[in-house]
Length: 307
Image 1 (tube, helix red, strand yellow):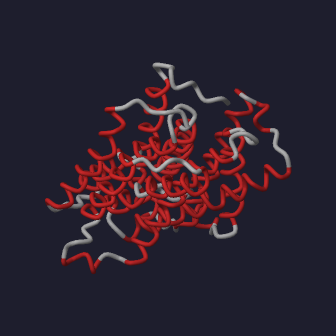
Image 2: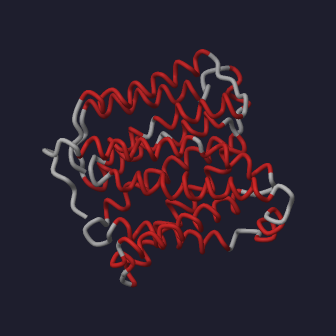
């Protein structure tokens, strides 16, 4: 899968739309995670189901549309499984822990800290140039995220420490979801690493999963609602969202893709306000505006480079 040349007038638009789609799906994810948590699911069960549905769905879709992508060498399989366990398995677990212990808006902002890790990994691994505009954008985003997380208020000390740590780790795992396929792009097709990454994470998470919880919930009177939440979380917020993000890096740079994920901050905040009646103080609202303006400003004003 070769990147489209930067001269193409549609490459940046296509890549940006894919990234925005992924960010939107990630932003509404808190709804389904909270609902499944209320139904007795732990972070392990939720993460297992996300990987199972995403991996199975992508496997079937790839088998129909691009069967050659299912071929993989033993070395490639090991790489894909390790990628899935770290980027998806650990990432999904930490997100579920974060959403269960801290407000959805805060968890979403911490997840958005991934652009920082993308820039750092880009410099260390790919020797990407450090541009002043990128550094300023990231620093402003950090300030905005800190405001949204309410770390400067007197009540910040009451924020759950484990939830905050889980959110930070989740942000790093989100960066890995984008950066690892880029690193192996010349040897492993993006579709291939996605399929086996999800399936590998599913197998690993299976050792932590209490399957009786899943079976009991699907036999309860609320089974239809539980099933809807599982399908939305696994297919829309995982398969569609993560595939869109990885595919976006074919058309736009990994940094641009990661920064565009800032839209999840807005979506997550709206979800918290409307679905869970969470509140945000004026400083948190200002922080959300700062994050989005800082992230989208350079992207809107300039054309993206190739990855």
